[in-house]
Length: 291
Image (tube, rainbow, N blue to C red; front, side, top):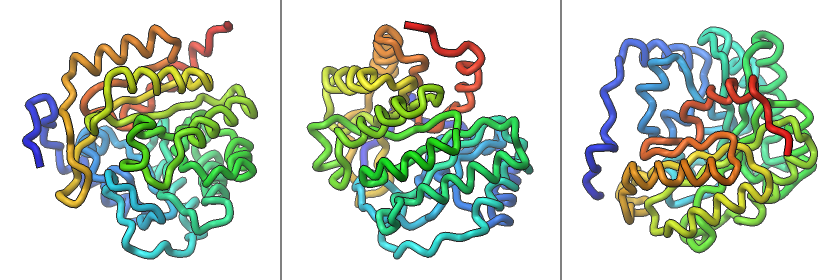
């Protein structure tokens, strides 16, 4: 594994605050993508009292070679108490904005859409002022399942495009670039008031031109928000980092994204799809500009 450059080194977290958040999560038997996917921002986010909840996991039905979430365990039956526990955690942590994501559950008819809906509904009951973002899988192209999530009216529907088309076979073998774009486009068509969001990781061998093309494709389906971050190799078993992209390049992508109409571009080496996700609340105050 390659040595990380200086700009990828993070400050040690204040473990007392991290421990407090972990205690709540363990008490309620909840998983977070922060822990399961070895996010480099876990200290910063936990210290701020925020977390991205991972439902229906932690075992995934896909085996993407970049991801640190376990795919060797068999998926378990859905926990009917999970939505209640998640809502209670949001209440205890006093979150203004919550991100709910999941492993891929291709074994379920609706890909887990109904569990997302139940989580949204339970959070609304006890934390009605909390804005909700769902980071969803592609549901195997089941747009009826997507409609269930849309009908629950989360403020943000996020689905990561992950990488450029030329790398899909190697990086995301069970995914489909066009299907991911279609999910975002369908969301926009069915519910224009919901903000759509996507993310891409770089450093896997893509070119600058390919990244810009992905950004253009996302704007082509009227995606509102994009995140761009450095891929970091979780272990020797995962895909190797081809390049550590410089902060200057990330800034160039940020400026380009803003120039083509994204409402928000979060682009930096340590950016992840949920990093500073709460900033969407500021966008909502302004609203979208009319074309």
